[in-house]
Length: 499
Image (cartoon, rainbow, N blue to C red):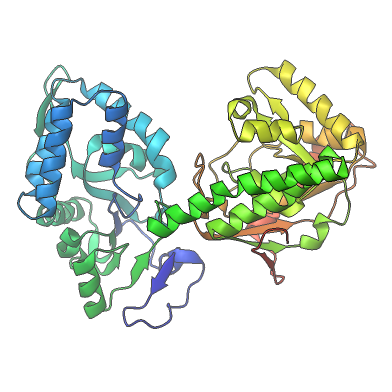
């Protein structure tokens, strides 16, 4: 995220991240925080995600799709009003149960939209909630697009376009009037402020669209977010702070090029690894070549930097059991880029079927675990114990699953039992903000910087089953303390592959 002053100078001083002025703002429900949806909270358009899903499921007729596209083009050219576009879209779900459309919206949100929420905006929402402000999601999108996002972010109040249903809950193909857009959106927020005793002069509004200019002028703290051309010009003229995010979305042509380059890097490096293994007549030598260079290469090509504190602990005791907190799919990739070689780990049984990562997992002798089958877990962890006795380090997330939280979930015992069975030290790796470069289920990386702290090795020499729970609690407490009070030492910035 970049925050610029309107005159092109340096950004204003911040307490921490994009929530700086909110942290220092007056508390109380009389302060409103109004958030637009598409392009502001979410990279892209939620309506586009729903259209793509319906096309894949053949739930949208070709003639309906072409009509929507035609209306959208005419709207962009200024030949159609927004009301015509959204009413045309709503007619395609006429006659359906409102309940079914809401369930469809929730499913599409989980599958396609959740990972598009800007982490910077999510932190802003949380900051306003901490201050006790009246947080509102105000959008021209439909309820089935807006409500899942609001629930996910804990936003209780919504101003948006609402579908009309009859007494049986069947959609009529109409929208409640007036259609929420531009001036009517501004008047809707004004009425909301009157009804809920919100002082607009003390309130914030975050939006990207030029059509939201009238509402920007109503609040005391306008915050253009990824603004359009006209909104940008007005913001510069009036001195409004502008925020632009690049942590989600395609990233444009450069983002596409980065992803192609990072994906393409596997082939040459795998071929080189095969050559190393053949020359040295040692499979592990080839694997080590690949694990040393490929993760770092992907991160570098994707524009991802790692600010690592305590990097010296990575090689202080090897082999070791490396623990890391798990938030998304790329966390293990970040840890692999640090540990580099002579390691194996744990992967889900679902990943085993992946043509790329399934084969890589088998190559490094990863243990594939079915969370629903405790028998496979027992067998898998026995294989990890055998690998550890051969001199391999173990990469494992003690929480056992990805957690959508800024804290730390409960730790499972398996990782610690492996350390006790093999006598390997435990090295905790604390990841602070990997959501800044990837969503929870995302397979692609966005440019950004991830903060990582490597804590000193912990010996398990005096651990017993009797004191195991206490020992696990101590290590989990170290994670919580590190996240609450991040180390102030100068970090080592890891950028290039193989460093």
